[in-house]
Image (tube, rainbow, N blue to C red; front, top):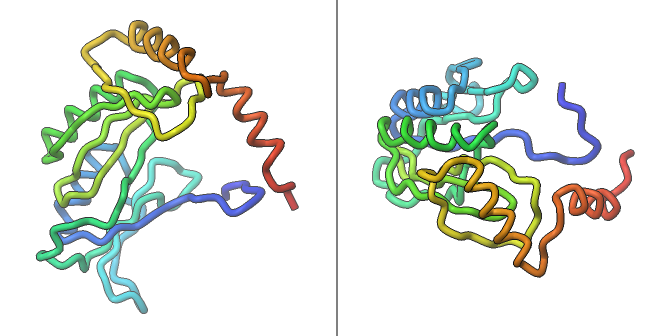
Length: 183
């Protein structure tokens, strides 16, 4: 069970048109594990539950029922945190090979991100956090052909030029001091 002190986002679900294609895309691109699948008893759609963590039964649910004529996705973005910059490179390549389009990198200062459209047009983000804070929204181009050390050095330099810059630990302390007390 997850330990939380207040309501905390934990999982999400999206409607899809081609369930098996989307299950393959998300499990093969993001190494998600199918934890359960079947037809809902009251929600009469086919559901596939996936997770990257044994602590959470499901983090992404794929549900049949998206109309084939739905050309616009109302999903603003589905985000996956990754352990390293190299994962951004590797997952981007896997995603493109599995049908992702419009793959582009952005440096948010507080995170290095790659955005793409999945095979049904939902925006997906993969990102790695940095130890910096700057006010958002912020987005500079991200060139993943540069080595990790250069990317981090350039990110820190750009962040320090921003008037809102602070080390992430300082921002986190401010967040904690303004958060509601745990029950």
